[in-house]
Image 1 (tube, rainbow, N blue to C red):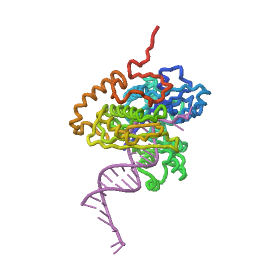
Image 2 (image 1 turned 180 degrees about the vertical axis):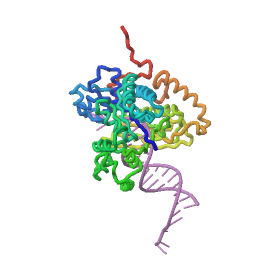
Image 3 (image 1 turned 90 degrees about the vertical axis):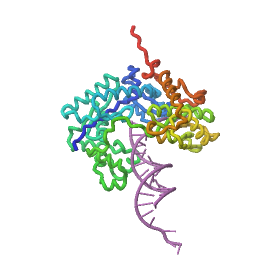
Image 4 (image 1 turned 90 degrees about the horizontal axis):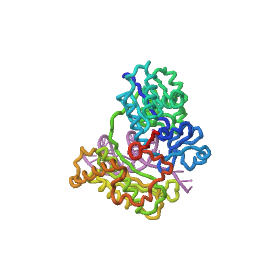
Length: 420
DNA sequence: TCTGGGGTCCTAGGACCC
DNA sequence: TCTGGGGTCCTAGGACCC
């Protein structure tokens, strides 16, 4: 088998970079972006990282550092990030037909068609083009496997060029690099596996690569075995290009404040259900199994309550009215008066293609209504049309105190520049 | 006081069948 | 009292990712 050239392109501090597009005055300033409900810090500029602000840290815990150092804070704005992500991915597609959209800010590209002597120039060109066309800075790592390109990308993030390639390096040189990478940095090795390996005296990626295969096979699973192979340059995770339909669809939110009233929770659950239903209709899927869950804050251990209710549908559907009625039925089973609830959610599971299934004849007439609803909402904005039960008081709505409110995918919200 | 959201995959164990 | 063997399918829970 001939070896592949695999590049991982990763946007630098992606959400922060998106916000900076409309606030160029914030380049070189410390900036963070918060998760939904302004809960945790999920994106940090380099300046914010240097101040010691940690990834995933609760906002209230970092508040002191933030205030003292005049860190700029944004609530997350996924409409904006999603749109910018699409532009980045579209740009990358010009450089290789084999591309895997791995996450909102990452993509794998197969660059096997590029000659080794031209490789560095080529990846520098990718980096420059993305920056010019979208304004987003990226780092690029290149190697023979996905796992190694992740390692290369990690190095690219800290060197001057912002790119790093292993293709022209000898095995010895790569081994020296791997000796300096702790196992926890390796893609696929999480907290539990790190602990397991460390307790067996395996601390860096080089030691991991050379671990006894039979011992590992006994003590681990196939994914870890593949990861070890990939560290040694044997590709086990191919690039998966093209769209594959999702298998589950979950919509859940923490409430902006604790909620005790059944009516408020029902309102939230119906809204989550309608969002999920719209998502699956866009992918032409129908639902067979529904879960509705409800919980209090997991940080208040004494009075913790969590319950999830599952309902199997005899006739799979994508119909918002049918689905929200089922969600209400499930919610009524798990709601107990007296708790202060923190979060509710809806999971659509057992999704399948609408085309491959005989749709229940009685539901069929509602397709037109759903189409109309989706079209109206995409033209006039989110929730222009909804169910009567869904939107009244919005007591449950999440906190978003620092939003830039920019939405480049919805015309009325696009910023206007005036030339004088 | 305040702690995100949305995914995938693997495995062990139970249910069920012959 | 003694209590097979092998297969499939499903599910819950755990681990990982961004």
